[in-house]
Image (cartoon, rainbow, N blue to C red):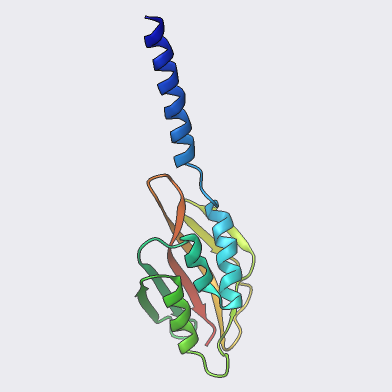
Length: 147
């Protein structure tokens, strides 16, 4: 009987350690959103792939500020997003801006847009999915083009 109790306690402790290890994430969605905004403005989105910041496909939506027309593209990873955005540039324009993070709720982080500038892409929103261990990953990106 004593051995069964000790074995049960051991298994319980082992399971608790395993559960804790599974739910430990490198970043919260808010931290990941801040890292994303920095990488976006520095034109280094591909660096986030090393941290598995995106799992699976990433959807990019760009809203034209004048016409309201949406361009929606799906990419395999953030490096592909970066390459596509860079390929569209002429003389390093449009530039990129990410203002202050307003809030992160229910898998959506929103950024402040104070005013629009010509030839500038503004980060508006990043949405997240969550792995089985409840770790956030980037699912979609929403940008406003100041045209």
